[in-house]
Length: 278
Image 1 (cartoon, rainbow, N blue to C red):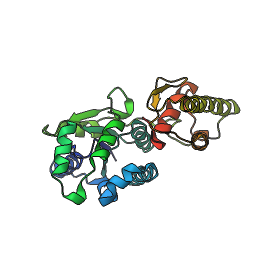
Image 2: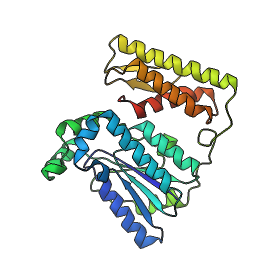
Image 3: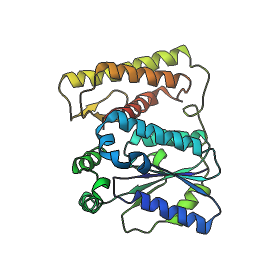
Image 4: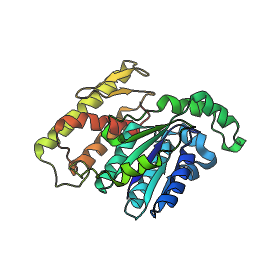
């Protein structure tokens, strides 16, 4: 069934919009809705999780797993989480595409000053630290309707009405994107494909490691074969890049892309979703 991906900073109204949408569905359709939320997982550990890349990575993996499981059920699925990484939103899109269902993205946007003010009104145990909010704001990659995995995109300010009719039309009247080689399992790729996959990813990793050695932390690294840049927010050991490259190659062996030209961009998206970069 269809998927709604909510994204935005803490306090931007994601859970409120999820609740509104569930209520609207009950009134206008007989379609049940399942909400996958990070609120239960975060609980009182929210600051610790967002300060530890490994814990945050586990959080994203858990949410993605729940979405993948529920998409096979007869209910609309709403993903209520920060979803601030573009590459992660692309991974969710691929799950929808593989499941042959539709999706839309709702960006809950709000001024940072308003978010901080609202955060201060929370119970002490429920608050995010100001450092956590600032860090998430710095990392947040706004969705773009020009990206096929984020279209249709609904951008909502706190006081905007929820466009229920438009959302339901996007989900129920739009045809799902057909699965392709990048989202369905395929036979083992050809020798040439594997050679190029290895060469391209190795070249990108070499450029990143070289940039780190030159002290490019905080600056944008221009990578070969893609318009996607990478901003390194910390030093990542070369061994970690090697491990991630091997994971990406292993995944790509049975899911070849239509064109070798797409490999650099997909690899960069993968890196952005797995390590602390922007």
